[in-house]
Image (tube, rainbow, N blue to C red):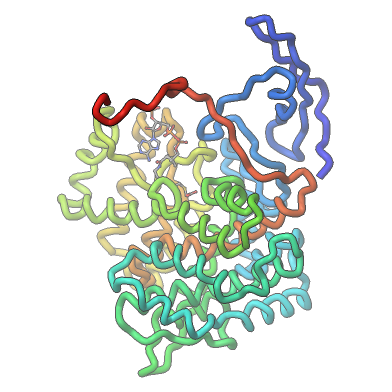
Length: 438
Ligand code: CMC
């Protein structure tokens, strides 16, 4: 994409005698301008240093925009609040993949294509059998998603737009089946095959909770809640797992392998694993005495010498309430109301903890607000999804975002294999001594 020059330029001056350098500035549609430093090394022999990408845009993108100060999230320009209330997940997938919301005909065609790919190769269940029954679902998902490349060799070529589209449909369609299989395997129940007459979220619920012994009708409120979880997690611009997918795919590997890398990255507790960590944190506080112990817990969080964090709080980009958390909180009320769990002690504890943290200067001064994971764990738990599976549900939902970002990268004429540089601070050249002299 041709970048839009901003008014003016950036001039970099040096105190070591290196001549100063003018660098181009580009303007986004919204958001901060960027300084194009690509010529820096060639012209000065120097790199920039930015571990954690605090000030570095790794790509240009048209997919998702976050205004962290306002607490705003847009997919292709549409506010998340509108998408979460007016669209379903597959419409959102279409939007992320193709740039526009589908009309009725496009939607029917897309839903039909996804629905026809929901089954996985029967051999997949034998592969799954190699895992321990108590393996963490994210260990299983990393393996299963990577293994898709062994089953679908006809959609592996990243440089072929048609194969990319087929692999995208396959991944979106098969993720719910794989997550449900990973769950059924742990509890020793038979896998439930997908049912094409059900919605995407309804089908997922059935594959998770039905057994062959009796009929199962997914509850509409819970189906809507699951669908909303999927929408809210569908994309989040250049976060750790998305950047992982982009970097992985930049080598030209196949889409299934790149998405498996995203799953692996998402697993971490600072990223997608936070919903699981958050619920475990709430359990621990409850075990220690519940609401009465919140003060003690908050003191531990604030203690500079402790590593305890308030999980589900804070975000690299949001320095205001995460808009997804607001929507998730609403869904949380709906689900608990539907299931008669409003007096659930864990939910009451979560509400009290949130209130106390939001009034505490430690969190206020650092602009730490609840993120999406604070409530999504409670909703999933209420629906009956076991805690270790939470991150796998996040991976299911995020798959479309990863694919949309990967497609965007491959289609960008400026795309190159990702190759960060380093500031080397280790030993200079030295010689190996014989072992007796070391
Ligand atoms: N609890 C207590 N203190 C915190 C927390 C927290 N959850 N988050 C940040 N801080 C403190 C941090 O210690 C630091 O304090 P100080 O300035 O005194 O050193 C300050 O706030 C700034 O934090 P940071 O670590 O520089 O912020 P970051 O942008 O590097 O980290 C984060 C962002 C999400 C990793 C972090 O807030 C965190 O670990 N939160 C808990 C885990 C979590 O909920 N993650 C889910 C993120 S949303 C879902 C997703 O996108 O994956």
